Image 1 (tube, rainbow over the protein chains, first blue to last red):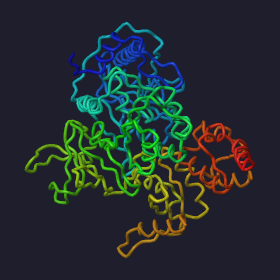
Image 2 (image 1 turned 30 degrees about the horizontal axis):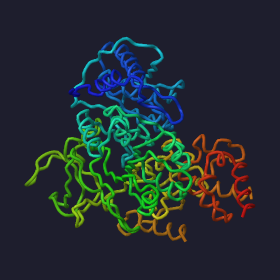
Image 3 (image 1 turned 60 degrees about the vertical axis):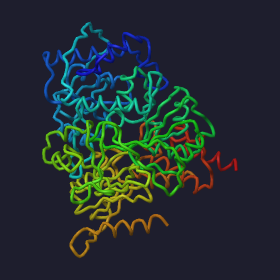
Image 4 (image 1 turned 90 degrees about the horizontal axis):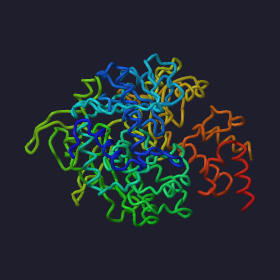
Amino acid sequence: MEYENNNWMDRLKHWAEVWPDKLVFKEAGKEGLTYLQFYRQVCTVANGLLRHFNGKMPEAPIAVAVDRDVQSLVSLFGVCAAGGWYVPMDSALPAGRAQLLLSVCSPAVLLYATEKEPFPQSDVPKLFIDTAEDCSVNEFPTREETLPMFGIFTSGSTGIPKLVVKDGRGIRKFIETYCNTFSLTSEEVFGNQIPFYFDASTKDIFATVYLGATTVIFPQQVLSFPMQLVQMLKEERVSTFVCVPSIMSIAARFEVFSAVTPDALNHVLFVGERMPVRHLNYWRMALPHVRFVNLYGSTEVAGNSCFYVIDRDFGEEEVLPIGRAFDTAQLFLLDESGIPAEEGEICVAGDGLALGYYKDEEKTNAAFQTVSFDSFCGRIYHSGDYGRINERGEYICIARKDAQIKHMGHRIELGDIEVCASALDYVEECCCLYAAVAEKIVLFCACEEENRRRLRKDLSGKLPKYMLPHDYVCFPELPHNRNGKLDRAGLLQEWIKINTQ
Amino acid sequence: MKEKILEILNDINPDIDYETETALVDDDVLDSFDLVSLVSELNSCFDINITVVDFVPENFNTLSALTALVERLSNGK
C-alpha cells in the first residue's frame, strides 16, 4: 500500500479497518479513542471544516487551540484530512502573546475542541466542531505533499515569533526513517510528554498513526512530579518515551526508581537541550535494558537531524555526542567562509528541511541558503549551533553563536524577552541574560527600584510562562563598555558572583 | 515555620497570595522549575529530605499542606 498524498488519512482509515478496537490516543488514566472512533471523529471535523469553507480549504492556515488531550489531536488530523494545514497554539497562552501569534499566522479560522472558547479577546474567526455528531462522509480531497502540512511557532530574536512551515513530504520521510532506525513496531506504546504546539511532539503523533501503535498523553503535571511520571510510565505500559532532559534530571535528583520500575519501557529518547551525564547515568543504572538516545534537531528540520544511541559510559564532565545524521538529513560543519570543515556551524540539508518562515522572506533567506561546494549543491539550514567531529567520527554540539538559550527544553530567544520588557513604559533600557550555572533567566532593567515587582506581573501578560525571567535586577542605569555597548558579560559575572556563593 | 516557608515562596514568585491560593500546582501557578527550587530550599532551610514519595501535588497545592509536610518531616527526624 502506497501512502503519499493525504497519506495520514489513508493510514488512519487502514488501521480503522484492520484494528477498529485498538486504542490510538488516550490520556493517562482515562479511556481514550480506538482507531475506528478516532477515524470517525477526524472525518466529522474534516467534514465540518469543508462545510465551513464551502468545499475547499483556504490557503491560509487553520490555527488550532491545543491542550493535553485527545480532542486536540482529532482537530489536527481533521485539518489534514480536509486538505488544509494547521498551526497548533497553546490554549493557555496569555492574551497578548496569543494575539501576537495570531497576527503572525493570520489564520482562516481558529479551530477549538474545548467547551470554553479560547482567546476571548481575539477577534479572529473561531470554529467549534462537535465531534459527537456522526458523519457519513469519508472521502476527502488529497493535498500535494510538497505543500505546507503544519506550522510551528518558535521564539524570534526581534520579539516577533517565527512560524516555521513544514511540508508533508518531509514529515512522512522522517517518520518512516525514525521508525525504521529504532525498529519501532505497532506494539509500541508512546508516552507523550511534549506539548502538541512543540515540534518534538510530531514524532509521537505521527509515528503512532504510521505504525498503528498507541500514544498515551501525560498531563502537564508529570513534568514537575517524577513519582507521577514513573507511575504513569509503568501503569500505562509505555515502551517508548520521548522527553526533554530536564524531566529526566528531576527524576534522577529524586532517585525515583527506588520506588517504581517502569518495566515495559525499552526506549528513552531525549531532545531539546543538553542532557547532564550525571542524570543520564542514574537512568542507565536503574534501567539497564532500556536503549537511551540523544536526539538533536531544530524546528526548522522535520523531526530530528541527528541521533546518538548511548553505547558506552560517559564521565560527568563529558558532553554526549549528537552522533550521526538520520537518513533524511545531511550534516555539514561550515567555517566562517562557508566551507566544510572539522569544526564550524552545524548546517543541515536533506528531505526534512522546512519550507521556511511564514510570510518572512528575509528571515527565510538568512537561515535557508542554497550553496554549493565540491560534494554538495542544494539548500541548507543554518542552525546557529557550533559543532565538531570527535575522533570516533561522531558529531558533537558545542555552543550557540547567538542569544538563543534552552531552558527546561524550551527554545528561547533572550531578545524576545528584551523586546517585551523594553515595551513597558517604565523601563528605560534592559538586558536579558542566562546564568547557565544557576539555570536562571535574569532580566536587568534600567528603571526605578520600586517598579521591580511590577516587572514579573507585566511580563506574564505578554510572555508564555516558560519564558518569564526568574530574577529581576533594577539599576538607575545599565553599565556600558567603552564602545557604548551594554556590558552583558560584566552584568552576568556580577550576578553570578552575588547569587551563587 | 509558616512564615519562613512563605518567605521562600515569595522569593520564588512574589506575585501570588499564598495564604488564599488552593491550587498552586493544579493551576500551574508553580511550574516544575519553581517546584524544584522550592524543594531544594525547603530541604536546606529546614534540614529535611523531601523524597520522591512526598513530592506529590497534594503536598504542594497550598501553604498549609506545605507547612504540614515540613512539620511532619522535621518531627520525624
